[in-house]
Length: 159
Ligand code: 4NP
Image (cartoon, rainbow, N blue to C red; front, top):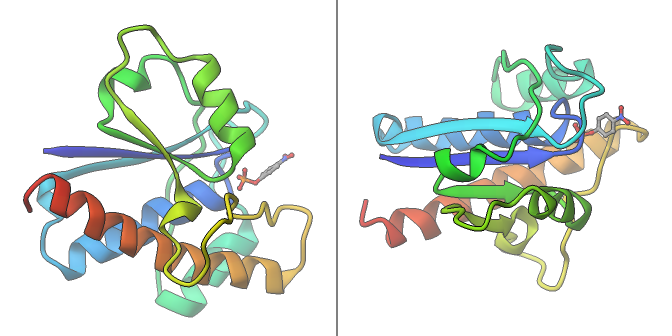
């Protein structure tokens, strides 16, 4: 079993979408049962809420995905429960690493480092204060990055 946790700030825009797209790729490759997948936010603003309407509507429109995740906060214990922790930007990464226990087992990576088209970018930009086009851009970016990340870890874990 391989476990993956996607993390952003609020857990209502980027990371629940990354989780849903990653699961879509797993389903298409018929390897869903080999993975545990979740998402979390480093902040507590939106605990228990469904993903942002704009994220859910775009996911429905582009990939007919229903996102049902409810926001939860990232916690130090996640370092023992997930093989991979995938941060959406450097600020998320810093917040994650502040909670890192000395004997943590997770590998912590940046989502944008798996972009097949652009190198030297670190962030999946936060669309929360943006427009519809920003949500669309993030959707396509995450479709690509989650797929490339899956290819990488499937190779690392011999699947
Ligand atoms: P996310 O986006 O980190 O991709 O879920 C945000 C959602 C909410 C806020 C910021 C970013 N907020 O400030 O409430």
